[in-house]
Length: 541
Image (tube, rainbow, N blue to C red; front, side, top):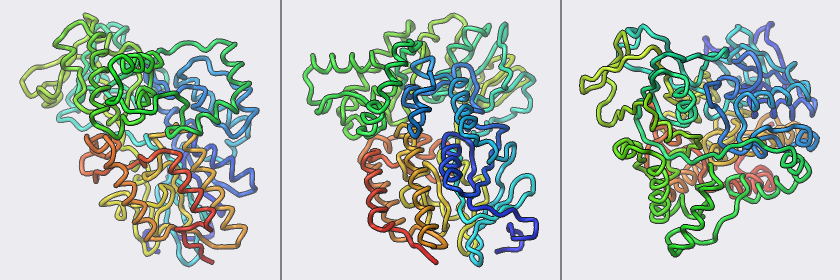
């Protein structure tokens, strides 16, 4: 241990495990460990549970996975008692759900809120993690679990002369809890990712004028969101076992029906019928219209062109439609799910500013100026500039393993890991839905449950067999990292820079981070590792 690291003292609090985060992952990890009698200290930056759903309260914030499956499956009574009001849950409903789970299982008592973890240092002599929080507290634990989420580290906007702007500034990822009234205001929103696509239609309805500053045109599929009837909810509650079974048979954790052949093999009429069916179903499952859309560029082009025609039909002005047309394969960037996004550009009080034609030069006192000299005046600006995805929250903590090696240094050239859950050189440290796992390419809550269960079983294995630690072997870590990279190169995901690849963050090493081989394949790898005595891991006394 170095002189400036977190070191043991008489004031250190001892426990079995430290869990960082209070979203779906942190809440479930704490539940599993405490139910088994482990002493757990859970640390959360926010004042309450919720994770990303605590912070992201912008207008229109909702999930892009249907409510009935964007929920925990571990407790049958919980499934039967909770009622989702809409097909796609809004942020307040998801937050209420997580809060309900925390209350139902009395989990808040294990959390320290409004506190961040600043450092976590592995002490080789004691074989324990020494954790320091923002309050100065020091905690010693055998196990250290980062359940900080994939989209929880916002990218701070960095534009020239931002401090000159006299108006109000907001970030979609840190929205004021009391809400914002834009009535009678001229508003600018920078960015057109998922958050902006959800927020833009509602802000346009309220604002006097809205300027949408677009950096990258996006694919967005209608959600066709609606209220769930009491009969639908009762039926789901009665048949949840079957709903979950069908989801678990899917590579993406969502139940769907589709053909067994590619789009390029379909005749014109069957192609039209299938794509209309997928469009009317709506949402993220447009990517499941054909089984080869993420692996075959020709099939993807056929469907991408068809979707673009659907988008064009929603926009009155041909020139605006041209600017809104995506220029990458469908799904290569996160597929957005919208409600009246493209129709919003038919409004007289909405102006699209295409930053590909002229980038932002800098802010002025009244607004901003683009490189072509045009100035846009507004009373408030909204930054919908995204996240340092997958690794941002992990690397915000000073995590150091054996020989003082920091995770930042280890991942300087890429996110080496084993199964997306462990990292060689960092014993007894686990990551929930980290790089190298399906995570954001799968139903997130189901992916979280699988990872948490894997981590819990690994911890139980260590304890019951009286080991001191479990750690990924360097050889298996290298093989897994290379395999994840190879799989990604068989897909459309590597054809464009995105937050999947780290390409949206200056200076971040680029490479496709999630495991793109599908959930079922990944789960089988994990199962085989366990059944073969934790193959790929070193178990030390």
